[in-house]
Length: 247
Image (cartoon, rainbow, N blue to C red; front, side):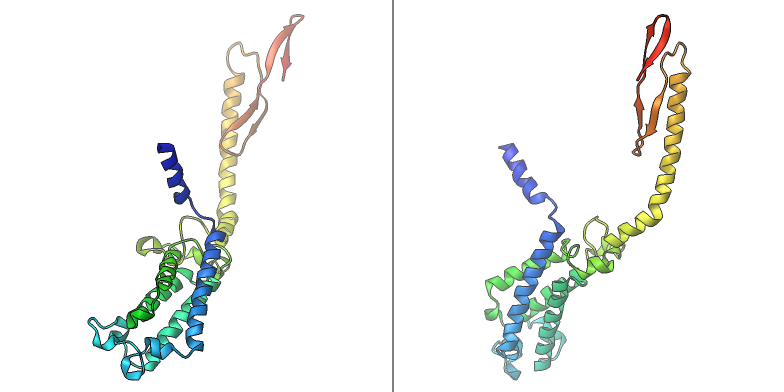
């Protein structure tokens, strides 16, 4: 029973492939964009999300509390169109993977405010898609097939460790960061590794060849590049009173 539980926990605890997350990101953004485009195509932006005074079907201004959208901004048709435009623009950014975490959070919060204006128009699938969008903001969905990954935006993550994931996700390095490490840091590391290997080789040679009564010699001692020394042992035996060495 414990083994089955560990296998189940391991299935859900593993790190998902960036390409799989990118596929989910693209599909979720595409479905939501089509949904908001259809609202525009049917001319329902103001009726669904406008205030009652400008033709909205909801009673947003007569409920307590009033949605933050109309507490912070005037209850006009222009505000409803602006909120619709913010959501569509943020979803387009999520689709192409540009500033993905920020765009996903903006789209989630703004669409939630539109749902507060007319709750009857917010279906269960809309809530589930918002939940998925919120989770994508904190995932690695912009590490593949995204402008973020190609433009090197994932490098700007020094401050997000304190306030949350906004520009980069997880400990993995972006391709641009990896190239910079290979160009700047790797040569110095290789130089230090070579010096360490030389010191290790000299120490091993001294210990093997300087011992009293030693009847073996070091052959083909070569650094392995990983802090170890590969040594081909040499065995000795006597043939006609003469020491012979057998690799």
